Image (cartoon, rainbow, N blue to C red; front, side, top):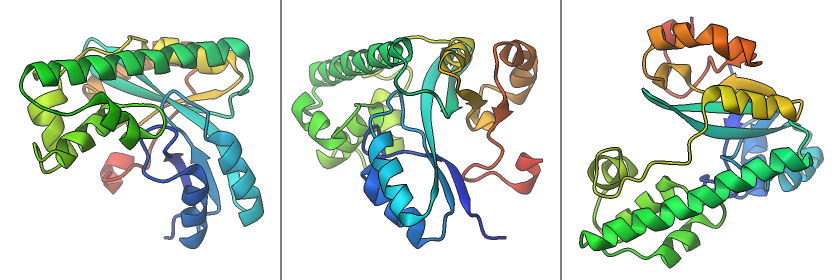
Amino acid sequence: MANYVDLHTHSTASDGIYAPSQLLHMASEIGLRVLALTDHDTTNGIAEAAQVAQTLGIDFIPGIEINTDTSGGEVHVLGYFPELERPAFQAVLTTLRDARVRRGQRIVELLNENGIAISWERVREIAQGTVGRPHIAKALMEAGYVQSIGEAFDKYIGKGCVGYVQRYRLSPVDAAHLINSANGLPVIAHPLTLPGLTTLRAWLPELCAAGMVGLETYYGPYTEEDER
């Protein structure tokens, strides 16, 4: 069955490789009818994407993806249809983006201290928008230290590595409350990448009480059994 909907995409406003307008044109070319832009911690690409979607006849869903932490690891929370202009909502996103910048700068400092010569200026050029660890990974690839983004995380910037810096911490419940505060719909992203399905089942009552309304069922390499 052809897939006509994609509810989890990124643009250069965060860690995607295409500008919002390019993303929509590519979606149109492959026959998508509905697309959500869910950049990490920013809604800066939404206006451009929405305008282009209208000209292409694509039903566009404004969204966000918020990275959160638990004792077992990272949990990502998608938010759909938030009221973008709510000052309190945007203030928290600004705090998250500022924390990303500080984290990125510290990661580069640690790498430099360990003889790995990449520059913060180059990382910012690669990012174009909100800086994330994938942009640092790309700088490491460009400088010849690794052959892939995965290798960069495994060797240099993943947990336990010389360049690892803990992120500004929000919990999944915090993210659900934040998205709900802007009248959005919170959804757990790629749940099978969480720290164990048993843990997820234990969390669900608290997450549902916080306003979580869904789980991302169709994602990348998921099998039919995963989806069930």
